[in-house]
Length: 194
Image 1 (cartoon, rainbow, N blue to C red):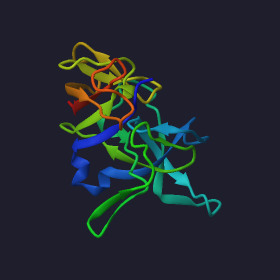
Image 2: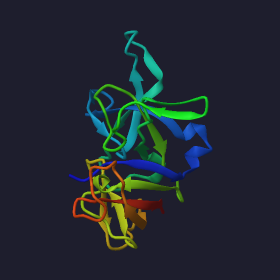
Image 3: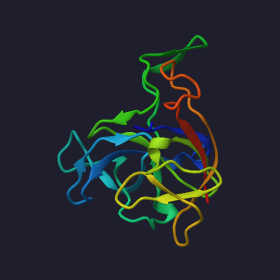
Image 4: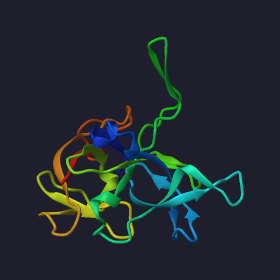
């Protein structure tokens, strides 16, 4: 199974805080959302503000519902990507500490909020092979996959769709569990939003 990972390279949301939000992934729609588990690097669209988990009849002003795109022709302005924040990490007296060992294939459990980043033209980031329907080819492209949170590789740009250029790839280091350049050694891909 291919690894799902998302890592910022250069994105507008690094400078514009309004392009970073919290969201809870759901199936269904805004009238009947059903919380579901979500992977790092999932491509989503946002709905309305989530219901407040403490006060009945109120909304959570800091969190929106997130859904898999219902079409592969979603407008760029409506597209976000899940970027699970590091958990169990901190800097104390200049030393970085991490609790646990899992840094890839992170998942957000159903009903929990995660960080989402708005995608803008020119944004660049790294994603794992698990964020694609099939392995992409460097120098080619990818588009959204309807009703899924992944990208579908394409040999050429697709009209009327958000296109992602596959600019480069590199071997992904996952601890010491996978020997370098063996068949199990995965690539991560450098992607640019066009």
